Image (cartoon, rainbow, N blue to C red; front, side):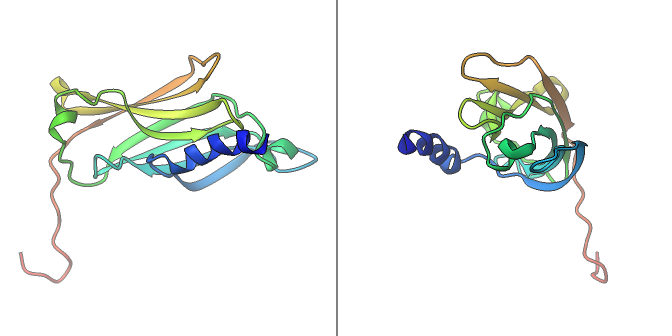
Length: 164
């Protein structure tokens, strides 16, 4: 039994997806036992596209089950991505061959549910589009959120006190 529970957790840890850094959170529901339910704000960088960062807000279930990691979080999430540096698109992204590629995944229940972010390239508008959604092995959720990053030329400024 223990081995059956550990394998999905190990696979999730070893997968090559971006790791999120928690920026902050707000409580949404008081719990007598364990942590409160809350909305968590996390940030991650698209590892394949340097220069893009995404902020993700998601619901996190508290209580005793949340404290021990067996609670199932709701499918509520929102995403906003932005350009923070120069962007050089790989040819296979620019051609659309990697449309729908998963760039982030987070477990939102013990075994069967996760929050994912996938990337698309919109060539006519020269924009990256990020879609966040929740999936479940048996029954997914139509709840989703989308963010677009219009790729702009990036001017790097010289360090203060250096000649131009």
